[in-house]
Length: 194
Image (cartoon, rainbow, N blue to C red; front, side, top):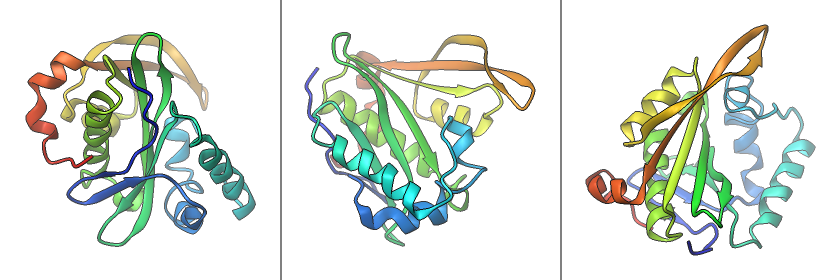
């Protein structure tokens, strides 16, 4: 594995880049303050500009580490920050990373999550030289399941009753893609410019 950090990635409709403080208002408008978005991937809802600035400070100061990978998802057409995607778990010893992502409700079901995920998978294998990339979703999050399947991940199994939310238990479903599998699926990823 190579520790390369968060580099810029361009796709047909998206620019994935490091966060900067100018993203604050888009983040508030499209996703970090939205109760329909944040809890779906286990993050708190941020209700004030000060909270978002503090979050951005955490993101931006972490870019000094070459093992930190977090991208602002920018829709090229509008130049808006519509979400984020990251390797939130990076295991350098065992050469794997785990993806998390969120896309604002106004931009969901338009293929942006799949486009961003494919771009980060390509980056992970081709730039960071990972052996394995994993991803998971809550059992009731069917849109995330569709994104994961469209990106060529293989189902590995469930951590049963992992989440307890609003009085109900949900499984945590894990998927992965190995470097060799990625090479067999490379056609899915060829439209990404890293």
